[in-house]
Length: 66
Image 1 (cartoon, rainbow, N blue to C red):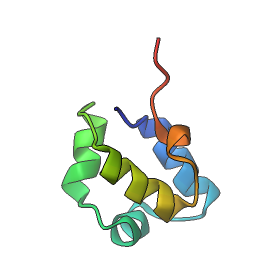
Image 2: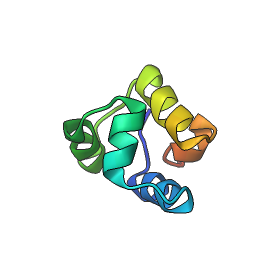
Image 3: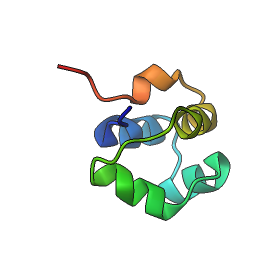
Image 4: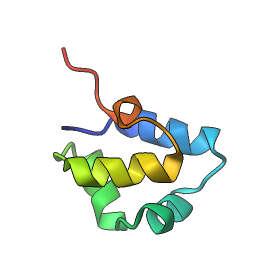
């Protein structure tokens, strides 16, 4: 599964949360967010951690499949 970078940053903005705060709250690394920008695949566990930190459904963060 792939996280949509724009959706991720938009969700942070809606929560008035910085990327630094997200990293700390979700327990992920800055390198992970760099990997998201490069289009790398994410595990369900990591997507779940980020969704929990942003208080949203994991599906809201995923790239739309064509």
